Image (cartoon, rainbow, N blue to C red; front, side):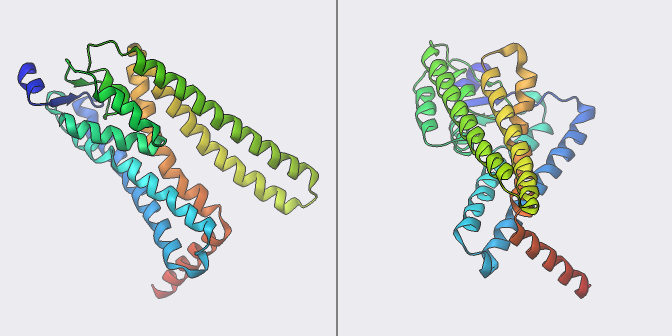
Length: 269
C-alpha cells in the first residue's frame, strides 16, 4: 500500500488525533468556529461595500483583512473537518493538492517569499508519504524528503526570526508612540478610546504572533507534535474569528451601521 500510494503521488495526512468518541464534538466545535468566521467576515465586507459613507481608504483597507481571513481559514478547514470524520488510514491527499494548499496557507501567513520556500521544498525528491500535520504546509513538504534539508531549515528559521522580530519591533514602536500621545494628551475620552482599541488589537496580535511562532518552530521538534498541531489550528481559527469583532465593532462608523441595521430589523419584525 505504501509503494502504491507513493507511486501515484498520494499522501496520507496525519490530521488531528481524536478518539472516535470525541470526533463528533470536535467536528461541531470547529464547524461552528468556521461558520462564524466566514459569516462575520463576509458580513463585514458586504456592509462596507453597500454603505456609501464607508467608501473611503481606511474602510477599503478593512476589506482586505476579512478577504485574507476567509481564504486563510477556508484553505484548511473544510478538508480538516472532512478528515476528522474519517479513519486515520483514509485521510489521503494528492501531492499537487498538498503543494497548492501549502502555498495558500503561507500566502495567508505572510507574502511572496514563501514561494521561494515552497520552491526549495518541491525541488527535493520525496521518499515518504505521510504529512505529519493537520494540513499541508512548507515544513510538511520538505519532511517528505530523505535528502539533506538543512538549507530549508536554516532559511525558514532565519527568515522567521527576522520577520517576527521586525514585526514585534514595529508594533512596540507604534504602541510607544500611542502611549506617549495618550500621556501628553488631556482628552480623557480620546485616551480611553485609544487604550480600549489598542488592548483588543494587541490581544489579537499576540494570539496570532505566539501561535504562529510556536507551530513554525515546533516543526523542528517532533516530540512536541501535538502542541504544534493545536497552535497551527489556533493560528487559522482564532485571529480570523476575532478580527471582525476587533477591527469591525471597534470602528465607530461600522459599529453605528450595525446598530442601525439591527434596530431596523427589529422594527420590521
